[in-house]
Image (cartoon, rainbow, N blue to C red):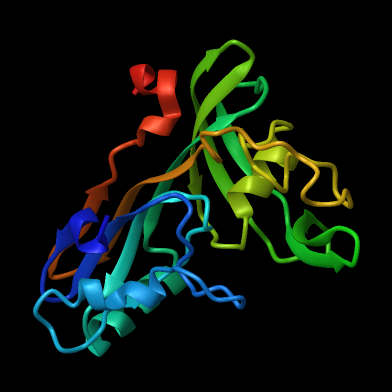
Length: 227
């Protein structure tokens, strides 16, 4: 499917697409498909390629904002840097969660090793990372949770789910394993990782804010009945 068929919002300043699971935003070092490699599909009548304003992991689907001109890019960048952008994610956690809602405040840092590859870990000397969460539903030992990150660290929600709530996101190929474990030793479910960038709200006064919701994909299966 072409990216232009996944446009959720478009005007002269911005495009929001529903990024599919399995497609990275940046082109991998080894090459291959990516949003970056397909920006020509999102020119939509403009001569200039749009610019992605944030990142979603390869295996995360949902709302991705792109700026269509330099002025909009500067405005959106400032909105992200000041924390004015609101992002909401849905995730299925592979385990029960204590409580109904709360705030995870755990600093995270990047580590790497020859055996384990790179990942983010909870580390006192790391960058501050905070995430609000709300339990949506529980069923058969799993939990559907809405996450609202207030900082934008790499793999923040995935680390906070696994290490902060004690239940990794279902299908997560990295944080379902203990820190330091060798990657690639986990058998992944056919549905992939159940993490979806559900809603994005971007202020842009004096205009109305961009407020977009991406349909929850079919891979969430039975959890669609709870939404």
